[in-house]
Image 1: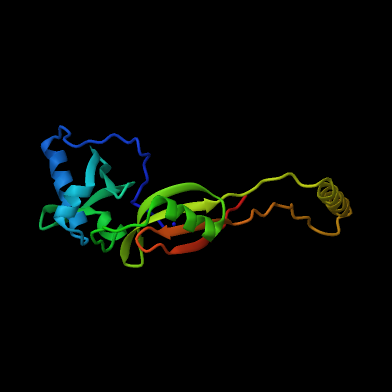
Image 2: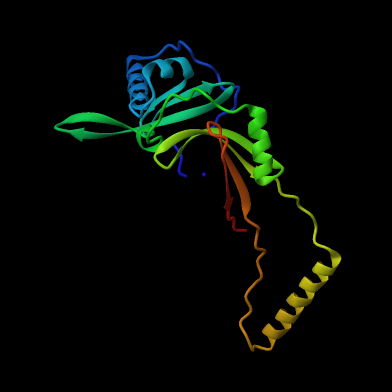
Length: 212
């Protein structure tokens, strides 16, 4: 799932509806709101569904974190601010402009139970579920992501014996100086992932390759 300026926070993240902000923080919040609205959603929708979670205004770390709530689903959108100068003026840039691309007012979504059923049909028993506002193509969609649960088991005694025999043979061959021995490494199976579009109900299956 991409470099993300979108972060999923726990549902118990504090709701900050009327925080006490400095003038500088208030300016960051206003700019971030405008940047998100600029991607396509309406101001009315934003004010109804987005809640301010946190503002960070430190050198090298300027962020505005919002919580998006719609039809019982919650996720957070983190807007990381940078800047550039033009004719001596400092102009802020917002990560959401590129990470969200294009947005629209999200009204209808499938139910949580339907989303779970679709995910199970897509990848089987799943783990690490998350809700995200994720850009797919040039449009941000509300999605449900998860990983297929993997069953771990010990190698059988036969597999262990065969492995030990290969290692002894390799060591013996190495001592004879005939070949360079490369150490064996376990190849981990890919992690199967599922992404359910909560607006259309479509599931996309993928995989992540991990290294030891």
